[in-house]
Image (cartoon, rainbow, N blue to C red):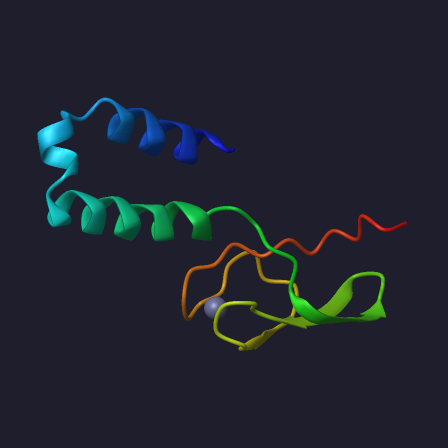
Length: 86
Ligand SMILES: [Zn+2]
């Protein structure tokens, strides 16, 4: 869990039970969770390494193709280009 997830869950857990029962509380939580989840870098799909410094891949959320960008310009998903398999 990253610091944004920690903070979101801490706030939600601290809310009164009667507020949590309201549908709006869950809607707010899920909306913010979606934003927080986008801040956690995901590996691009179909990662292709052209050279050591030149890679292309597809955003997992919206299938747009990028070359070595830290965030998807369309949906805001953080992208992780590091090759951890080596
Ligand atoms: Zn995207």
